[in-house]
Image 1 (cartoon, rainbow, N blue to C red):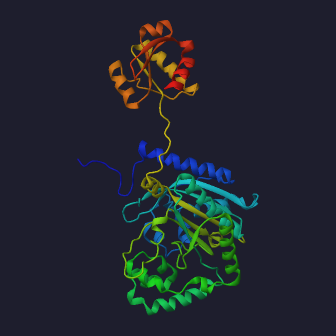
Image 2 (cartoon, rainbow, N blue to C red; image 1 turned 30 degrees about the vertical axis):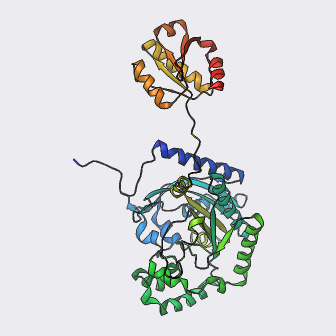
Image 3 (cartoon, rainbow, N blue to C red; image 1 turned 45 degrees about the vertical axis):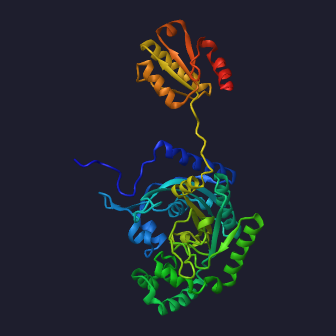
Length: 436
């Protein structure tokens, strides 16, 4: 019989890995609270139309990466492939436009995409994100980028680069698309098969292609920054001035477009410093590598309009938790703090086991992290478990101690032990742990 294992692209988060997830989550949660973001969690299942309308039918996510299903009642649903569209749906559905503006939200959630399996890419993966809804000012763009920069520095990833660009708006972008289409027609024989189709439906998607041949074409493509309208140019200039003022380093990447149709004006990506050139092709025939950004986002005023909101601005971004954890491990400078047990309770006999359960709760209330193995009856086997936890002190409860309301306190380093009355145990333990 074949073994049942995780589906391809899915992975278990085991205790050793969960420590890293908890570390990232705590940093994100603390900074979110400091900057006034409220927590939101949307359903893992949404109506398929939310993503086909919001993200764009020609995007890779909608075309080939979404997990979709039809319920017995005929509903067409999709597992959430990204976090922004569901939050916009919630903003509209829950009447958040009537709240004090802007509405600032954050999340830490699993996403699902049927992507090609490769290092660092999973089909169920975790993202955290920040969204500012109801704000069109460029200060909000800079704030979101700044929050991500603070998170990376706090986590211990101080060496990174912010790649930034502007995609213009519905007034200036159509003209740029015509210019880009004209250029791509002259180079269409150099494009991959998918991009030959993309250049007709949405030429901007060609700029996001990771195929080597398309990346080479992109180097010579016209730049959208040369075709911005006055309003978009002023908006982008303001974003850069804010970043300069608050000391966030950035690199202009004129061909950065992101992979979703709902972005307008500001788009950005965070890359490890040593990989800052990876998104664009190297010059002189150098090696080409397609990696993944640690975080990315931008302004998405168009998404709110597509889903029914009017005259509402919004900007946000998301970070890939697994990718960030991998980067943290690569630095070999960051080790998440793990609360280590200080005491182990060993017991022998039914009455002692019952007393041990009560003692465990007493120690927990006293703030002393404790471990035990209540299912084991042998003192020897319990002490082996205590050694694995590397605790400095073991408390031993036998029938005699249970009757006399006392505990044997053994120091594992030297094996010295003494009998301590239960009513004095907490104070004795605290004194001993100070010295250990």
